[in-house]
Length: 197
Ligand code: OGA
Ligand code: MN
Image (cartoon, rainbow, N blue to C red; front, top):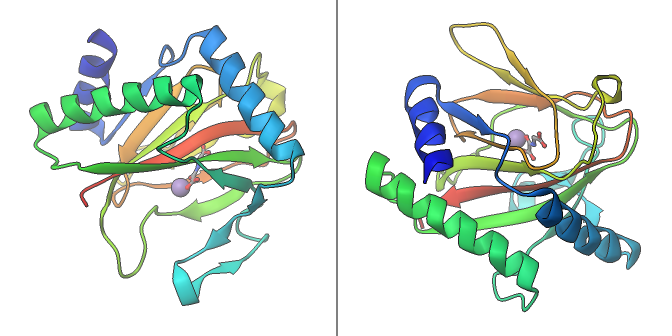
């Protein structure tokens, strides 16, 4: 598939890739509806930092609210999303020999004014997260809405990516430091990791 070929070429060259056509506007709408219904049901929680006993909530570092997706969900729109991710995993394994075996994704909602400070997506005692994948669900996001993802490239200028609906960004989880600038409008995404276990 052309989208995946372009993404993989970009990852091989720059350690990250962006495509604007991962979701159709219809798919974005369907996922936003699920996200909104579950958020209104009060089952999202404040995101934390670290794993297990090291885990703590720290709103000076990140302010998003999250809900993990269930791979066995009977929701057709979530199943369609998992199918796309599995296709991407198959491509990545075939072309980059990453040995990916599983994934984990959560919905994320950044209330107005929240952000996620500069960090790496990796835990101290767990290196199984290989690729970070972020799918944005924001219809007509404006430049004045802030909330950009900034990827800090080791030997080049940083890149700023707006969280436009339908757009997917992926990068090597342990290689690139990144941050989310303060969102001036509620900011929605589906964020996750492709794993080797
Ligand atoms: C994360 C993260 C970036 C984004 O959840 O770890 O860095 O653009 N998200 O939402
Ligand atoms: Mn991150």
